[in-house]
Length: 180
Image (cartoon, rainbow, N blue to C red; front, side, top):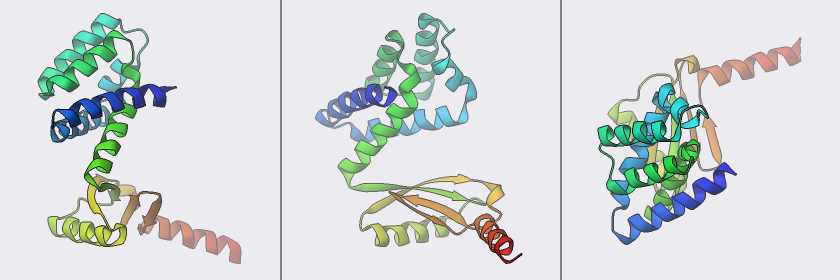
């Protein structure tokens, strides 16, 4: 149900932004909202809590949108969603929007998890390598997970490449269990 609701909002937002030539602005807004939702447990709690009154949610989200400098289109959409008690689909909406915009631009997004922050040279080399593999422009969305110990986990479309030390140790552990 959530994906259906998010899809309808995403389609409407996408078409409005495309008609007005504001896809880049919408992409920036969607990235910012998605990042805010990932980083703030309070914000996620606000949009998912059934005990927070509709008016309180609307006021809080209007303040967040203003503080983030979101476009009028995104701010109005969030206000409408608050009014209709649909804020719980916001994470799905942002993901759907970013997917639609990337498709429109012919860009793929690669989710990269690294053991340590990547240098600019590493980002450039990885982007070029993934572009050659995918045959399209690739945008990296990077996160850091120290539990990988070393290496990367890259998700590009439906494929996943795991070169992490953690995965190699797990494979070694499994092969040792088979021997003994």
